[in-house]
Image (cartoon, rainbow, N blue to C red; front, side, top):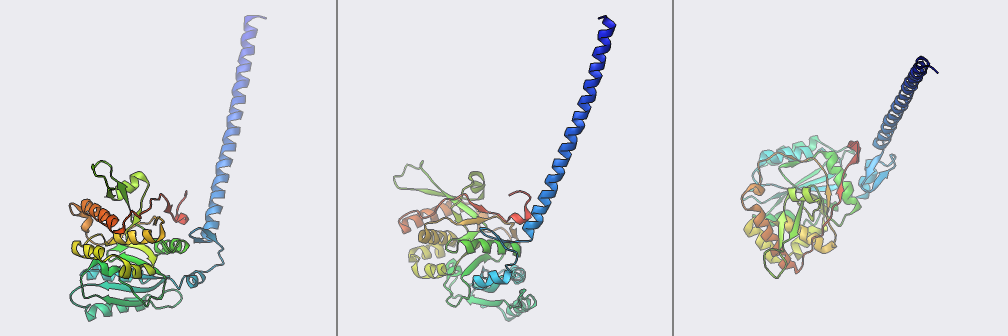
Length: 340
């Protein structure tokens, strides 16, 4: 075979290879495009199906189960227990917002100021409540719980005539969307003996201080974020059972309540100790967007972490043990997420 014939044959083979390669690429591209299109359609159908159902804390319930049915199963919703102190504009905004939440039964405002609430303030809030009735026509009850003593313990004072088992403890400068609060309430319904909240914190054992007894440090959000672990949820935004108000009022050591009154700090840590000591279980952190409408609080003051660390170790000594339990679980509302 001559050189020219070999060259022609090789050229024809090369041309045939290129044509085959182009066909293969078109085939692969076509198959990939169809596969991606199928995935998009399937994901869309799944999203529609999920959003047509009502979420529960432990799975999905049938869409025929109405919100009213769920409310009747949990003593018709929850009580909002709001702590406030001379921030009337913030109080008005918060009450106006939460009054529109469909599963809210009543609002109790913890009032510890020297003077009682003014008539104008009470009238304004009552008008707001009447304008925003829940979906079933139920009018939210509004009450001021007046306290003679200015103490942070007042936010956990027993309320004997509460109509709901669930209490949502909140500060007057924190706003959550109603659907976020409702989701947290669903989570609490699945574990009504524990605390369910939006602000996680953690304690760590300290081994380098040279002391023989156990010593712990209090750590804030960045430690929780870095470690993926927490042992407390703060009562500035948390659900718990109403029975813990009675336990705090009647069974919390007087020395702890005196300590929190004197130092104006750590009543939230004390409540976390109380619940953990009663349940031997961790709290549950619910992911949610927090809108803080007030100025920075005591956490921005220098020495805050050191003071909270002192509280933790003081309470360990009072309880005779460390009752807080570590966990890494986080409850997330997957309805508004692409991936979960």
